Image 1 (cartoon, rainbow, N blue to C red):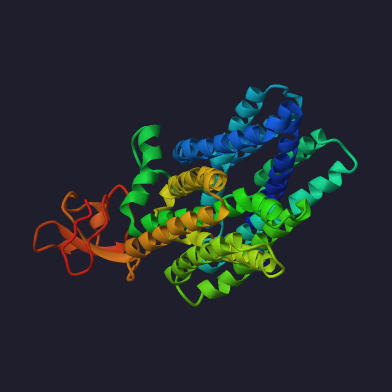
Image 2 (cartoon, rainbow, N blue to C red; image 1 turned 90 degrees about the vertical axis):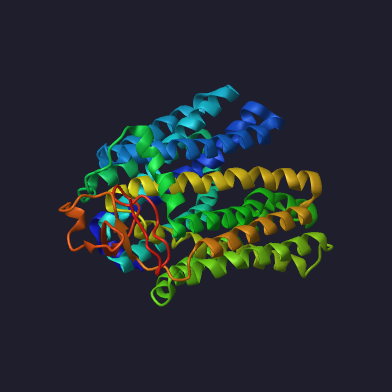
Length: 456
């Protein structure tokens, strides 16, 4: 897996991702302390609203950023977003009003919503080989998991010698270092965008791509399954550990760490596994495992706290992390298969936006249900949602899913460059087969083999 780091451009980009993630982790801790300074006992409400604002920014800004990514130089866009995030982080220690926190959080997350999909779309160009790209996806997953473990520890260490305001300075340094590394990386020239239309039409294309492509519709359902399982981990762990098990704050970190360990171990195993079996054979079983684990969590939360139930919870959280990693990590491979090179920024932006819309649904659901009906019911309801999502993915993703599909064009004139090698179809138009994606020449998905299909 580490062999991809020999590629200088990818090594610089991966390092940029890591330092930016560490900076973001420090900002998360510092923002909690800032909210407490400003709002006191209402800090949880402030942070909950800030989290909702983060998701709204991700859902609304990412598609527009994906449309701009094909028109603005990628290096300039990535560096500009890093500098924007650095500027916001530098400003946050000086705010003294809740509304100022909300405004700056939106600006910070809007910049992240523009940076992340653009960054994701660059990696396939830097690492065109399928095996290298798979390794890069696993490394990215590891970076996210390690950040969740390392950043709180680093923040605790720094807070022992400096005030929390200096954590924002660390965040600023992280984003500036990320910008410098992006500048130093030699990025391949992107494929020119052939799509016409304004920003609105281009930003809507990514969503249309997901709606028209069966495997991408399945990917969205899989994202919902992961969001249902992950929400109970990120929202309800503190109440489950402190109120049900009556354990210390350190036990909360241990439980979240179990989730991260499960995710990391799976990410390490995935490159070899995906080299032997297809994405579908890995992602669907992992998605169906998630509701089974949540059923066990419901039973654990309903049972009296005892010596056996605590290890069971840690094992369940590790399994949720493993299942989530097995679903999320290969997602980039599906997007790469399903979009033309010029449309990758829009495709990744759409996935970023739509997947976070799933979290925008499940985060409040996990919180409200836990408060109103208790943790056993919450786990059962989220498990049912995960099961429905996994079942939807199974139905939407054809068992036979080749890249090349035979189809017929009725909207292109004879001699069109795209029809090179095509032959006249009996029903009219031109027939051929090739690696099929939704683009300017293919507006709908062909019907299954054996039926006549049109692409226009």
